[in-house]
Length: 440
Ligand SMILES: Nc1ncnc2c1ncn2[C@@H]1O[C@H](COP(=O)(O)OP(=O)(O)OP(=O)(O)O)[C@@H](O)[C@H]1O
Ligand SMILES: [Mg+2]
Image (tube, rainbow, N blue to C red; front, side, top):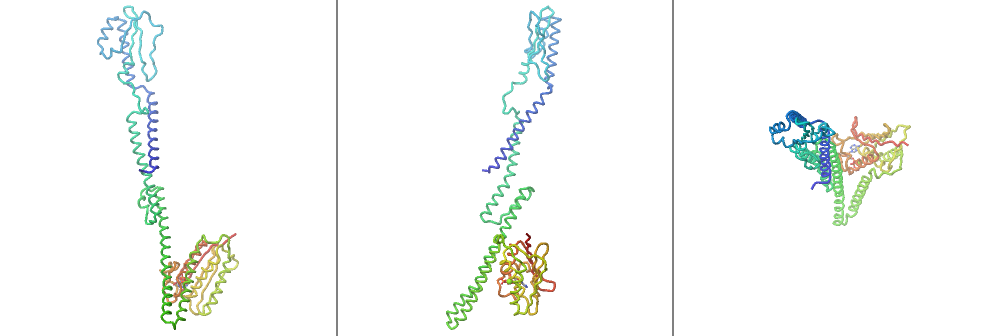
């Protein structure tokens, strides 16, 4: 059983078709009757001819001559012709109905015969007509059969094709939505509807885009979950190992406890970072909170400078003066983002090297650029360093979980900004982040 839309379209268009055929027929008959049909004028002439000759024969030869002439007529013609003797001529001459296109029911003529007797000649045209055109039967909607067939069958065919053509993609769309609702994200509709080239195929394309996006989101979530459980495993394994060692060797319990403390701290840090990562969604941003980006970066740089004393790295902060550095959003999240980037730069810098932090305003956006003189990142891996748990293998990348830049990117995106990384011209990595400046 097809859906209701199918029947609506089918019946709607079919009815329209039939009504149109009937309307056309009515119009056609109105126009058609204006003209006299050839049969009518031929019949009129024939009757006039017979009446005139009958009248003149009657006038000149009287009844016997007329009878002789009529005897020559075929019995068919004789049937409708009558002669009646009358005493007096009728006061009113019967007039032939001259209305165009229609034959009068009767043609009547008064004649004075040769025997001085008056006669009325009459020709029964109605009878003649009845003989040649049988009385009309009552018909459905007064449409002649061919019209009815063309209207009904043609209309039915047309509306069925139309209804099928419109409802088929609807059913395909519906099936697609059902499959997505059941969790099947591999469904694509555009290939099947590509050839329509209409709005419905555009709907199919949008549907495909939506499903692709959903698939991406779902697989990113799954990947993250997988990575998280994988990353949690190694510290947990080391914890268990330390406990086992402590049990085996009571003399070395202190050593094992230290290891346990260390691993627990790592786990705590990682879970904290994961929480930050999941909190940094735009819908978790406060409604009315503003902060001064310059103050924030300055504080982070000061903290980093303290740590930088040991490796002997110089951190330089440059900011264009006379700019309002107000940003709307969450200061704590933004601080973590900036801190992660500056700490990375610090970690990849060696003794005597310098980390540049530059704060500028580029077309209503505030830009922070962090540049170091370290080894940089291989070009092919540049785009992936912002993904969670991605660590590029190098001597210096040891302790982290690869969550720092993922947090930074999420925070910046949540604030309506962008972040990108490229290798500097004189080596080292450049991370550039932009957030919109708040304007009252
Ligand atoms: N300034 C840099 N110079 C060279 N490589 C870098 C730099 N910053 C990041 N990377 C590379 O990008 C990877 C991802 O960085 P990210 O900050 O996300 O992780 P992490 O620093 O290794 O760990 P976490 O920040 O979670 O402690 C790093 O492992 C490193 O290989
Ligand atoms: Mg990091």
